[in-house]
Amino acid sequence: MLLKKVSDMSSYEMQNFRQIKIDVIRTQPEVNLFSLQCLQTMMIRILFIWSMRHPASAYVQGINDLAAPLILVFLGGIVHDLRHESVLQDVEETKEIQVTTAQV
Image 1: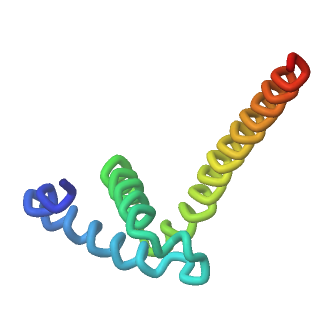
Image 2 (image 1 turned 180 degrees about the vertical axis):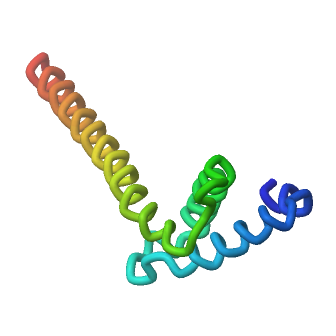
């Protein structure tokens, strides 16, 4: 879907897109999460949209390094919520087992 849009970009948009793509690939190479294709695509989209919505400052090299910790915090919150939800489900299942065995 993104590739279809690339063909319709102006030279300014294409220049920003290329630089963003280069920078995203270089983002936090020591963190395996940032080598995932889905995360790289997400970062490219976020940074490209930001650069188009803020043409006065546009995209400059290094904004990817500002976005990386924000994405980690966001994803960390999701993981925390999922773990918390999983723990709550485990507690509920344990309660159900205890009630069932108490009734027997």
